[in-house]
Amino acid sequence: TIPLPSHSVFVGWSLVKPTGDYDTDSKNIIDAETMAKYHFGVSDSDPYIAPEFVFYAIFNREEYVISFKDTKTIAGETSVFNFSQSYLYGDPIEEPAEIPYREVEESRIDLTERITFMGWTEYEDKSGIVVNEAAALTAIVDVNSFIAQNDKTFYPVYIREQVYARAT
Image (cartoon, rainbow, N blue to C red; front, side, top):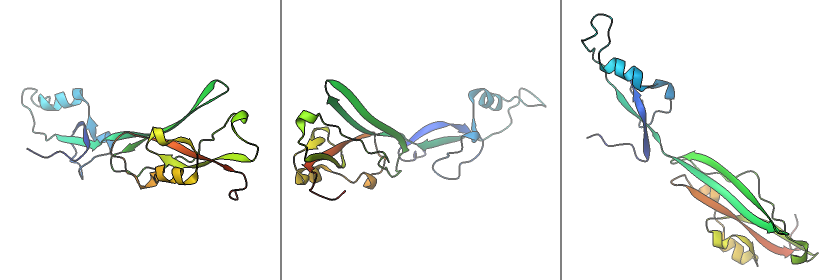
């Protein structure tokens, strides 16, 4: 028994030996019809004598979806920020370039306040607008320190602060 590469997905068969655990070159994969021709001995000289061929099992790394989501309701209308990207197992995750902007109903925020994006959390119940910066910082994770090992969703964390609290 040959051990399978870790976190791998069978892609197909090839007549070309892969150079490592994974073969990302899909042009070497042969389809079932072509494989049957090789396997059942269709040759120019004698269609009943099968030539010898070696077929190699081809694997690729598993693929995972990493999502960044925020749902907000303003004046009865719900909007969703949803950014998803596929990563192969072991690839470093990058946070999206676009940061979700959290609008707040005017009646719920003072003129001297603002909502500031602080970062991302893995926990939906710790996302949204938090009361103070210390609470926000305990929930925030460094997205760029994660590697793709499973499907994962991150949620934004915001704080409500005075507009004079820090320079922008």
